[in-house]
Length: 120
Length: 108
Image (cartoon, rainbow over all chains, first blue to last red; front, side, top):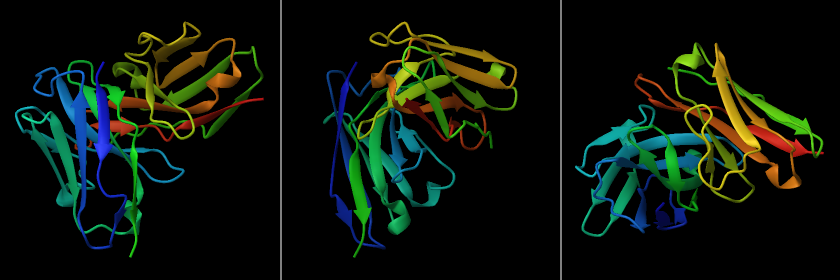
């Protein structure tokens, strides 16, 4: 089990880029067994997968967000990051980072989540 | 893309058994995972691969998967089980990570 912690601005202006970082502790992000993922949850709604990154830098994105999303990884810092461009109020949500088991295809560890509000 | 359907809410009295369903086309051909999310907290893996429990999850939690329906069963329900529950599968489509809409479990 690892610990994941999201960090970044809690308020972003419309049309700007949302940027979050997830710091992983208690284990190496440089593992071929896992993918590192971002998931969001709109207020009072369900879970929406954004995408994930492999230690090699390979990425996989939700097609509905793909044009605006970039997920990257920094193995030297044991961190991975999310950038979501051209945000609107519809991007207001709690953003979670999570570890994806690449063999069994489930999320086994989650960060506590961070609320990002898009407002001027 | 693949769709998972859950009832919005389920209510159960303490000590009784709660069953939360997750419907999908031939879902039995997939491995289903369940997450528990208590208010203000992150989701926690409750069941994986249809019916396996991670360490720390009580034996009261079990799962099954057959035909077009997967089911999360919570026996001897306690007040602390009140939460939202989400089913999840991996699908070999353009959007491979699929969550159900979630079910709010209310303990009466």
